[in-house]
Length: 276
Image (tube, rainbow, N blue to C red; front, side):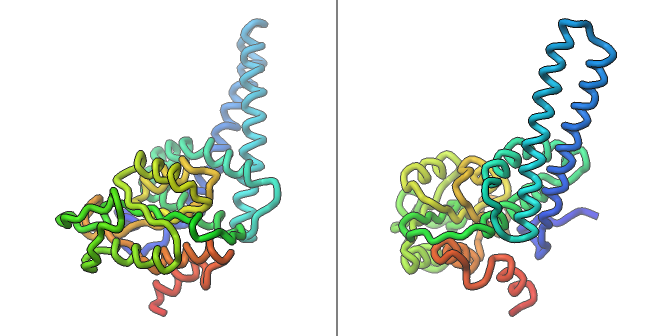
C-alpha cells in the first residue's frame, strides 16, 4: 500500500521514524568499528595498523559523541524539557547522523518526505522543550512565495507590503498576523533568499513554512537557531497555490513570545484532528 504524502492527508508522522533511523545509523557506525577492529587484529602489517588504529579511535569517539547526543534527544522528547549541557551534543549528533539516516531510509524504502517530516516533528518537539521569552522584533516568519496565488500581479517577495489584501491566499492572513503580533514576515523564493533574510533580520527565533525538503534544509542551515517548522498544504501540487494553517503559525509565534503557547502545537493539532 502506498503511503500518502504528509501534506495531502491527515496522517501524523511519527517522531520515532527519525529516532529509529538515527539509532540504525549508530548501529552501522558500530558495525564499521567492529570490522575495523577485526581487520586490525588479523590482516594488516605494522605500518597499516597505525592508520587503521587511528580510524578505529576516531569511530570510537564518534560513537561516544553521537550516542550521548541521541540519548539527550530521546530524554528531551520523553520528558519534554531540556537537559543542561546536552543541547550542543544533540545538535551535533543530528547533523552528523542525518545524511546516514536518509541513506538507511532509502535502503528500507522509506520515502524521503516521511523521514524529513519525522525530523521536523523531532525538531519542533525539541524546540518546544525549551523556554523562550523573545522580543517580537526578533521573531521572523519565513513563508514561501508559492503561498501567493500564481496569477497575482502584486509580487510580495521583494516587499510583503505589496500585498493588496484581496484574501485569495494566506499571504494576507500572515501579514495581518505579523502586524498583530509585531513580528517580522518575509516571503522567499528559496533557500538562498531565506538565508539572506535571516542575515538581514538577525532573528533569535524563526517560524518557517515550507515543504519537507526546504524546511529540513532550512532547519539544518540555521542550527542552533530555534526554528518551528510548519508544513504547507499543497492541494494543487508542489510550488503552486499552496496554503498553510495560519492558526498554527500564530501558536508558534505565541510560543516564542510567551515561553509557551496557549496550547502546545501538538495539542493544537490533536484538537484540529478531532474537530474541537
